[in-house]
Length: 614
Image 1 (cartoon, rainbow, N blue to C red):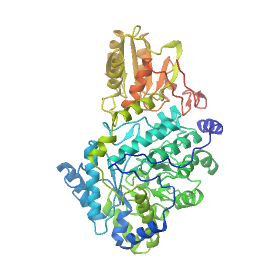
Image 2 (cartoon, rainbow, N blue to C red):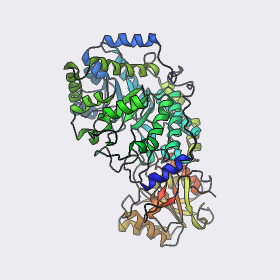
Image 3 (cartoon, rainbow, N blue to C red):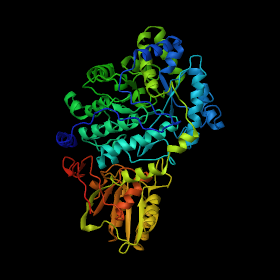
Image 4 (cartoon, one colour):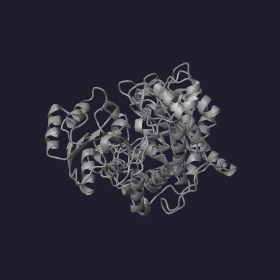
C-alpha cells in the first residue's frame, strides 16, 4: 500500500491523458497497399449488412469456430516438420494449420516462437499466406485474424532480423509519447508486412507492486496517468499502421504477487482505488479507438462478490467494461490454458462462462475439441443465445474488415523486404533506446568509465538468453558492445544464482582487470547475486551494477556506488546501456516506478522521476 500511495500522489501532478484518436495510416506496408484506416469511425450500414449476410450463411459449428483463436505448431500451414505434425496431432488432433481451420473453422491463429511459427520474416509471411488460403477454402470463406504477442522488451515472439524496440517500462523511463507512438508504428508496419494484423499490445497494467512476478517491466510504469498516455500513443501507432492493438489485462494486473499462468491472483483494490489506479490506461485506450481488449484471469472482490476471475465475470466485463467504460470493440480472453482461468470451473465450462460474461474471442484453449464442443452444446441447448453469438461474431468480423482482411489478407516477400528490419527502423530503435537507460546512483563519479582509466572491463552476471536477441547472454552482449566502443571487455556468465565457485572465478578475473559491470536480475534479500556483488566490491575495483529486468535491484545492493537500469536484457537495450557506461551517450531515462528501501518498504529510496546524468 505504501507504493500505491506514492503512485497516487505522483499521478495527481501528471499530464492529462492523451486520447486524441489514432494517427493517419502509414504508407507502404504489406503488399504495397495503404493499410486499413485506424477505424475510429463507425461502420457503414452497407458494411454491417454485408457482414450480417455472411453470418447468416454460417452453420452453428462455423459460428462457434470463428470465436476461437488457436495455436498451431509449424513453420508452414500445410507442410510442417514431422515433429510439429506430431505435436499438433497430440494436442489438437490435426496435422497442420490448414487442417485445424478445416476442422474447427477457427477465426484466428496466434503465433509463438516455441511453436516454430516465427523462424524468419519470409517464412512468417508464407505461413500467414498459407493460413489465409486455408480460410478462403472453407465452405463459407472467412479471412483469419493472425495475432502474436510482440510487446517488445522481454515479450517478443519475432526476433531479428525484425526490428526490436525497448519494452514498455523502458519507454516509460524515456517518457516520450512520440517515441512510444513511433515504436508501435514501425512495429505495426513490420507485423503487417508479415501478414500479422493483430498485436496483443500494449500492456495497460499499472505496475505498483514491486513483487509482481508476471507484469513488472512489461508495464509502462506506476503512474496511472503517465501509463495512460503511453498506452494511447501505442494504440495510435499500431492501428495507424493497420494492425489491431490490444490493451491488456483488464481490469488491471499491476498489483498482484501471483502469476496467473500458475495460480489465481486476487486484486484487493476498492472501487475507488481501481478508478484512480487501474482504469485510466483502459479509458485512454478506448478513447484512442482501440480494436481489442484482453481480459485478466484475476479476482477482484470489489466488483464480483462471487469471486470469479475477470475473464469469467459478467459484472466486470459487461458491467464495467461494456456499460461503465462504454467499450464496443472486441474482448478477447487471455490464454485459456493458464491456470488462473482453469482452477475453478475446468476447461469445458470456462469458454462458455467467458462468452456469457461478455467475451467475444476465446484464446488458445488447452483442448480445442473440448472447448468447441462445450460452446456448441451451450448454443444448441439455449444457454448461449444465437443472437448473442451473432453479435460477438459481428464485432470480430468488423475488426477484420477494419484491418483490411476482406480486401487483401495476403502479403509478399517484397513487402517484407521493404520494411522488416530495414536500416532506418534499426537506427530508430537505437535512438529510442538511447533515451531509456536510467542512472540511479553514481557516487564518486564512477561513471562513465574511461578507456584510459578502465581500459579492461569484466562483465559478469545473468546468463538467461534474451527471448528475441541474437547476441547471446546479457554478459556477452554487453562485453561485445563495450568492445566495439574501445574497451577490452571479457564476459563471464555467473547466472541467477551464482555458486561460490563462480563468485571466486569472478573475483579472480576482476583482479586482472580495471573495472567490472555486473548485470543483475530481480535481486532479493536472500539472492546469491548479493554475495557476488559484495565480493566484487571487496576487490576495491570500480563496480557498475546494471539491473536488466525490474529496476528495484539497487535497494538490495547498499554498497554499490554506480547503479543503472535498462529494464530488459534484450540486445537493443543492452547496447544502449553500454553506450551510457562508456560515456558515448548521457543517461536520459527517469524511473517510471518508485524504488522502495529494502529495509523499510514504506520508505521511498528513489521516487518516480528520479534519474541522474553526467
